[in-house]
Length: 112
Image (tube, rainbow, N blue to C red; front, top):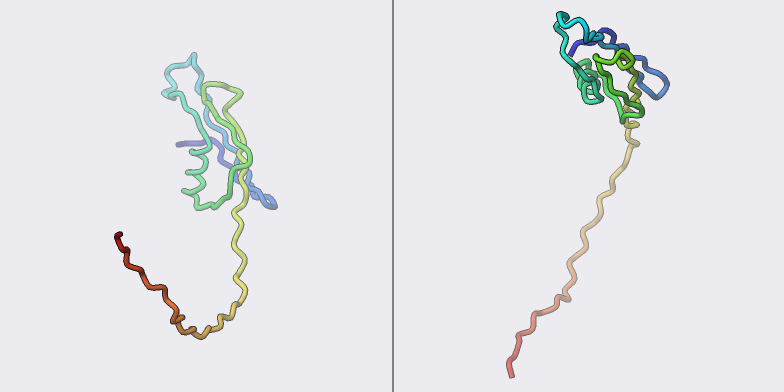
């Protein structure tokens, strides 16, 4: 998918992605542009191609190249939070306790 503009701005805990696509003028059929919609899945796959990790989506939009007011938009994602380094944990070895000797025995059924 080709974008005219694909800008990524990282703020404190958010990633803002501004996208603009080419406008398809319906009166000029010789442009060779087909109708196109850009949805959140397209933006997520482009971010993956650029190896930019992100969290969940906070704001979305849909771009359409056949409507002049819908050729640009901004998606907002959370920044992916990195796990904090694990605290040092000391594992103590517990002694095994002997198994209890009181096991219930199965009773035979008797018929009367």
